[in-house]
Image 1: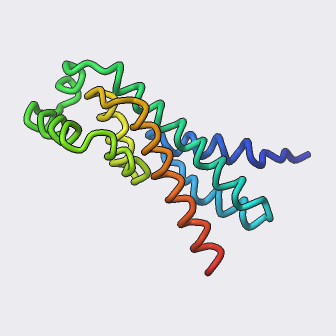
Image 2 (image 1 turned 135 degrees about the horizontal axis):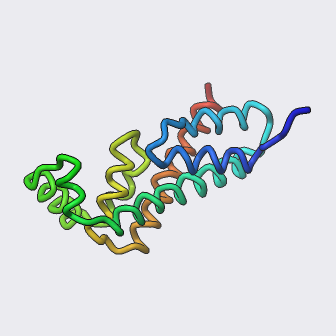
Length: 142
């Protein structure tokens, strides 16, 4: 007996990929495309799952305490540098939250330094949508 997870599986894989877990949501999206799932539905569902995962990172950062960073070995100079970047570029940095490894840190930093949530969430979603659109385009034209 096999189970067909389809879109729900894609959503969950994309959500987990936005956390610190090593999950490659692009592989799941490519699998969905390979097996004939609707490309736009797949892109939108992957985007939604990955964006919700990034929002979780933001929330974790938002609840953070500066003392925790120092306990984990972050140097005050590095904390000041991240804070300066967040204050300089603001929510637009969320466009880069799709990047491997550093994207999670960006999401957490945006929450930690209290970037405005609404534009941050919009930019997170746009960046992730663009990434999945590129994955689809490469697959389609390959």
